[in-house]
Image (cartoon, rainbow, N blue to C red; front, side, top):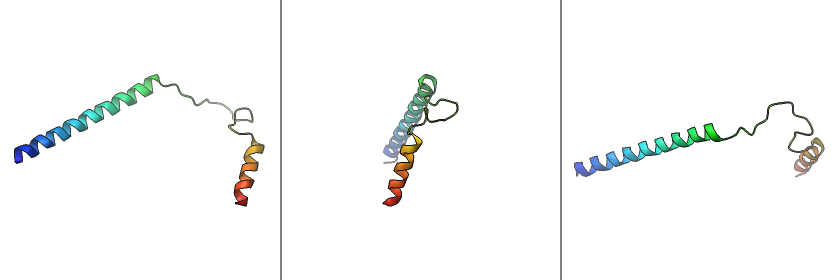
Amino acid sequence: MSKDKQIAQEQTENAKEAAEFQNQAIRDFVEERANDSRTKGPVDESTARMPDNQNRMITQHNRQM
């Protein structure tokens, strides 16, 4: 039985190492290839996700609930 436990433990360790390697490879790929979608610069009405007036109306609506 101890031999079976040892084999199972080795397989578990191998699987963990393979998963760690794959995770690191994916991280490296994403860091190298993915574009940074965040733009640096001032935020104003044209770059905001929602206009201030719409945001204000949503806030008022949420407060009423």
